[in-house]
Length: 85
Image (cartoon, rainbow, N blue to C red; front, side, top):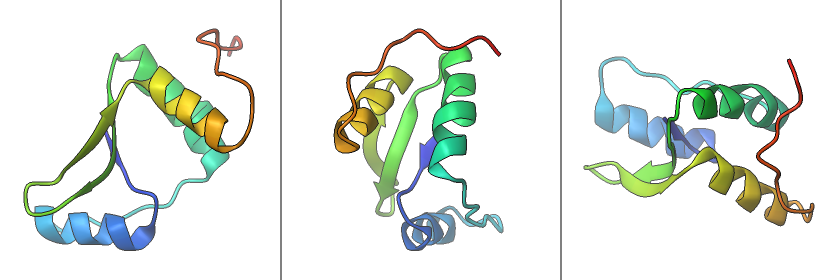
């Protein structure tokens, strides 16, 4: 599942893919607490900032994304355990 760090990057990818795609913003909190756990449940990988005519870029597991995010925010390492919903 692809995600971009800015609306401009997402718009460039939408322009490449065509089909009337449009970027939609999501808060970091919603992405981290809602969307990423759902992707993990479905065993999806996360594409980050794909670019260029072939839309290539980073591809991570959800755990890798959460650990990189925790590191960037100077938090401790991410645990694979999720709170009960």
